[in-house]
Image (cartoon, rainbow, N blue to C red; front, side, top):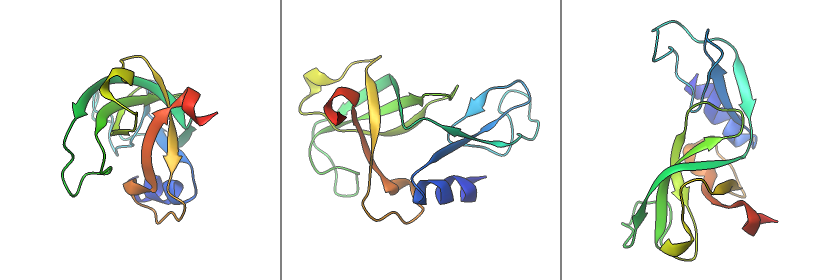
Length: 127
């Protein structure tokens, strides 16, 4: 499942998997966390979603995804029932809020790894 997920990132898509109850898990797992059953088919989800919760990083460390202050956020992508953790780039902490819509910023040359998603940015800033 993760190999397919990373391959999709390389191709500029985000994929999850559908459970037997119909939920879509992103990132995918091999088993449904609620039942332990194997998951079903891959599902392409949107490249935008909603911030479920977040925490501000005022002083990023060297190996973090952004050099400037940013938020770690759980983002529930359109079409997904779970949220994925990633960085959100905004000008300052005051621009972050739970419920805000964000969109993926892709790396120019994708390699099939989580850093192919540079970060998420407020959806209105991407228009």
